[in-house]
Each structure stands twice: as structure tokens, then as C-alpha cells.
Image (cartoon, rainbow, N blue to C red; front, side):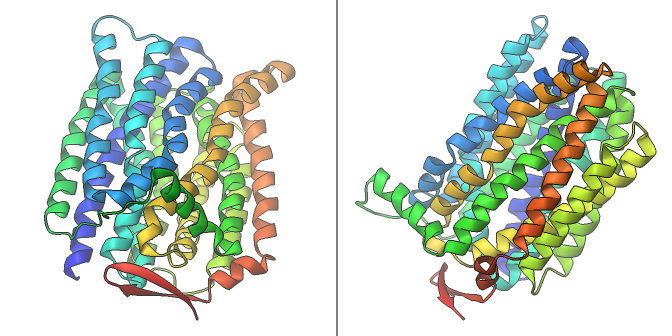
Length: 421
């Protein structure tokens, strides 16, 4: 293992811990709000407000990631995002946090977290060689799965002996560890900060040009926004679906079992990586994910839910790994921060729409059918699964995407220069 990969592992470890802490808060607040309101819409609203700033601020955050020291941006983003969680905790300690207080807290936390994502994505390109991108992608997927793999079962256990305030305190403590890991990596890594007279607007424009230079990249990013729409519907409605016929402890155990699927495939990718056929892998994995979504929402049976949920999460890292590789090797390293900012804005717009409409749709369908929010959530999940299958099949016939596989990435002065094979 080379020196830079060890630095990546340290940075990744910090993000893994942060993801677990964030998952505790997300799970705890979700159960708290559902128990108070009995509505999927309230849970969806909090998720939306906690996610929206990350999307809206992704482009300026990407510009900052290219202009200033990326590891410093990560430290500021991670450290200051604790302020929103502290605000929620203070309100709970003073009595009972209202839905409005929770919304404000997650919005503030997400606003600072927006600095993190483009810097972290670009740092991977700074530290690693193209041959290591796929393995790194597997580990990044593993860190992302931690909020579903470890957090739910830990949170379910802790909620059985305490309340949501304990989860918030643990989450706040994890911020210090993640900031420390970024500080250590920063100390031994050359800065990417640029001395430039280019205006902020011009920097944003050049970021847009980086993802439009090749039509295949923009096509891939636009298609990914539809993908996140359907995945977002699944993610936001899985909890109210299970809570409609079980308790928080069962929910925590179920989510952990489901997320184990992501652990299996992420470990495989972290060790072996993908070598070829990225577009085919992307399309096939998303098609299978759609099929498993339909199975997940088919019946209120925890055994079937866990089985299909496991398979669903097992398919996701292959899709994420393929998509990130195709983008990463086709964009110059000096523009990575700005590019990932635009990619985040476009691709994650699907999540914003999903979080805005899925809870309302589930409540409405449940009311129309007269069978409650659980049935409403299951129906919306199945429809989302069908649409995801349709999108995945369309990817396989896009020649623009297949051309991206013929690109070779060459490292020059820690920046990635892209040339056609």
C-alpha cells in the first residue's frame, strides 16, 4: 500500500465515522418525528431540508474546492455542521423540539456539509492513481452504507434504553474525529490552492465546461438525476413502510440486515475493483436494483423486506462505482472540484424532488386506498422500481456513454490530464 493510499484510508476512516454518527441522528429524528406525527410527510420534510442546501450550494462549494485547500474545506464543513445538531439537542434538553426546530437544525448542518462533498471527491483524485479509483470507489460506497449498515441497529438498541438525545450527542462527538483525520492528511499533502485572477463566475463557467466538453458525461449526469429520483423515493419511504407494522427496534435490525448487502459488494469492489464494461455494469446493476425495490414493497413481511432490501443494497455500489469512474477519468484534475459541484447539483436534484413528493404521495395513496401510510409507501416504492428498470435499460443503448470507457487518464503534477485512447 503506497503512502498516498494510506492517506486516503485515514481520510476515508474519518468519513466512515462521520457517516455512522450522521446515521444515528437521521434514524433517531426519523423515529421521533414519525411517533409525534404519524405521517411520512413530516419525515420527508426534514430529510428534504437536510439535503437541499447540499445540492443548491454544490456549485459554489466546488469552486471553493478548486481555489482553496481541499482538506481545509473538509475540516470547516465537517466541524461547523455540528452546530445544527447542537441546536436541536439544546431544544430537546429545554423541553421538546418542535418540527420547526428540527428543520432549522438539519438545514444549518447541511449548509456547512455542502463544503465537504466536492472537496472529498476531488481529494480522491489528488491522492490516488487511476488504477486505484475503482478500489477507492468501493470503500467510499462502504462508508456511505455505514449509515444504513451500522447506525440503525446501534440506534435501535440505544433508543430501547435511552432516547434520541443520546444519539445526537454521539453524532456531535464524531465530528471532532473526522476533522482530526482531515487535519493529519492535510499536513503531508501538497496544496491544490490556486493563485488565480479568474472571477468566481468565470470559475463556475469553467466547471460547467468541464462536464459539457464530452457529451457522454453530461448525458450520464442527467440520467443519474432520474436514478436518484427513484432511489430517493425508496430511501425516504422504507422507514414509514416498516414502522407502519413494526417498532423502531425491528426497523433498526431490518435496515442493518438490508445494508449488509452494500457491505458485501463494497468490500468486493474495495479489494478487486472493476476493470472494464462500466456502462454495462451500471445498467445491469440499476435494473436489478429496480426489481429488488419492487420485491421490497410487495408485502408487509419483514423476512421478504430484509431479503429484497439486502439484494437492493448489494446492487448499488456497482452502479456508484461505474458512474464515478466514468466521470472521474474524463475530467481534468484541476477542474475536479467545480465539476463535482455541478454533477452534485444536477444528479442530486432527483433526491430533492423525491424528498419533496414521496412522503406526500405515500400519505395520499394511503388515504385514497383507505389502507394507511404503510400501503401508500409500498405502492410508491413499487412504481419507483418499475421506472428505475426502464431508465436502466435505456442506458445500455447509449453510444455516448460507451465512448467514455475508451478514455485513458494520465497523472501529471498531481492533476489528471485526459486524453482519448
